[in-house]
Every structure is written in C-alpha cells, then in structure tokens.
Length: 395
Ligand SMILES: *[C@@H]1O[C@H](CO)[C@@H](O)[C@H](O)[C@H]1NC(C)=O
Ligand SMILES: *[C@@H]1O[C@H](CO)[C@@H](O)[C@H](O)[C@H]1NC(C)=O
Image: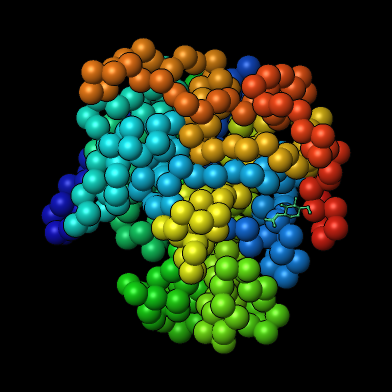
C-alpha cells in the first residue's frame, strides 16, 4: 500500500473513532444486564496445549480461560483456509454461501457477496459497538464494518497481529470508548502462531524471535518467551518425525506462547474494565496447523479446531469438556442468542438466507436442552478439563 493511502486510512480511522465514540466517564461498576462478547482467534492454531493432551507446551492463558469455559473436543471449521473460514465465523454461513471462496488478501481478491448481513453489520444495526484488533482478512469493507478497526489494513500484520502489547493497547483504547449504557463485541485476530519464514525469515520460521529483545528483534514488553528443546516436543500423529519438523514445532510452541500470553492480557483487560462477569468469551482458530495434512487439507488435522466457550452465566459447567459436534458456523447463532437478537429475514441471490448453525449456549448453561442432539452414553460432563496435566487457577 502506498504511503499516502496508509496516511489516509489512518486519518479515516481516527475520524471514525472520534465520530463514533464521544468521550465519557468510565467506572468499573457495570450493570450485569449488559452483555458483551470477546472473540479470540488464533491463526493456524491447533491442539498444542495441555488442554488437549499436550503435556510439554505451557499455555497458562488458555488454561485460565478453560477454567471459566466449557472445552469442546469435537469442533470443526467449515473450510480449512484463512479468509473462507473467517468469513464463516463472522457471517454464520459457509464460504460457498457467503461468497468468500478463497483468500481475501492481495492478489487473491475474494470477497463475500455485497448483500450479505455479517455479524458486525447486524450488531452495528442493533446499536452494539464493534471492534476488531489484529488480523481481519475478510471483505468487502461494507459487508464487514467495525466501529473500531486496527488491522492489517492500517498497519503491518506482524505488528498488529503479533505484538501483544500493541494489541492490548488497542483493545484497551476500544474498551475505554464504551459508555456505561453500551454493549460491545470485540474480535481479536492473533497472527500467531502462523508461519512467517517465507515473508520475514529474519524473525524465524514462526516469527518466534520477533520482539524477544535480542539485537534487531525489537521488544514486546508484555511477552516472556518460553523456549523448547526440539528433542522434547511432541510430534503430531500426522507429521513425519524429522529434525526439521522438530525444530519447526519447537519454534511454533514459542509463538503459541506469545498468543497465549496475549489471551491472558485480553482477559485481564476485561477484568480491569469490569467486564469479566458479563462477557461471553470464545477462543478458536481458523484452520489446522501449517504442517502436512493440516491447514488447507480436508483431513481431520486440517478442519478440527480447539474451541473454548466461556459464559459468565454458566459457572456450574466451568472446567468441563464436551464431546458434541460443533462448528464455527455456530458462533453467529451463539452470539445472537447471547444478545437476544434475531437473524435478519433477507435474500441472497434470490434465496431466503437461513443459518445452518445453532446456538451453543444451551450446552454451556445449566439448563441443558439441546434437543436435537441425542444423548450419548459415553458423554460425561463430569470430566474435569486437564485433570491429569495441570491445576486450574481459581477464577
Ligand atoms: C484428549 O484426551 C481426551 C480424553 O482422553 C480425548 O477425549 C480427546 O479427544 C483428546 N483430544 C485430543 C485433541 O487428542
Ligand atoms: C510493540 O508495541 C509496543 C507498544 O506500541 C512498542 O513499544 C514496542 O516497541 C513494539 N515492539 C515491536 C517489536 O514492534
């Protein structure tokens, strides 16, 4: 992007912020009937966490979130590719229905249909303040508008998607604009743990050196890098056990650690602004890990996703795991259900649009009435998350 365009979008951004959010007074006393949502998306994140049986990598941020969530063991994306998957997350319609058949960025240039009613559009119309920090990679802008946007469209994706201090600052800025009678939807798109060897080789294969404080790497003040020995990491079943794979996985773990610490920072922000007890938090990823049979493949390793759903109104089920089959197209119905909003009645290409996903709230709230799913006798809600490998911190 030429420099003058960067300046222009930065100006538009500042204007949008001032226009949409007159400054106000912010206290920590929030009315409990206000409901907010925080969506945390990892980029090519997989099951590298003690939550999913990996006893080597440390993910204290995810562990903490899991202690306030129901963890899903069988969550799937509708497609194993970045923009198409993100368009499904933000529209509730699979890529072939929303129009995003391929990548949105640069030369690929795929977009969703102009008449699509995306989640940010529906929420904006309902008066809910929307924010996005980090990776977006969906379009067109008119279909996916956010009131507050700091993404790869305003600055480099390495900075806004991997510098967790910067991401924290921008998320904090968004939260500081929310007035006491407003509700918000905040989407955080981590660029970790995506590979970066082909674009920024100086930072390592997974950008695991970016911001680590070593000469030329810059510093991310909130990040404490954790390093792993390639000999001790766990090679996934679908990856060949070679020295190159092992060194890649060790680097991937370090980068996952940065995302994990970023997740903790976001939860701390909710706490700081007094939103921990009225915000629904979702953590998942867009597609499988960038290894053979993972990302872009229609194998289990390509389409399975980690998935945590944290409802402050579902404390009785916190720390439990759930084996139901869930999909990322369930996110839109879940968020609409949380806010008490209906999906709009409209047509795309002459056909009435219907969501195929379902709200997951009944699965995480006390009154479990998910009537379309038969009770599975193997299914036990008393399995405590991660009992074997780590101790959950109290909320
Ligand atoms: C982790 O272990 C649990 C319990 O054995 C199992 O249900 C689950 O499928 C495993 N998850 C992964 C990602 O291997
Ligand atoms: C990360 O962001 C912080 C806050 O803007 C900044 O001080 C720091 O230099 C940035 N680090 C890198 C490596 O870009």
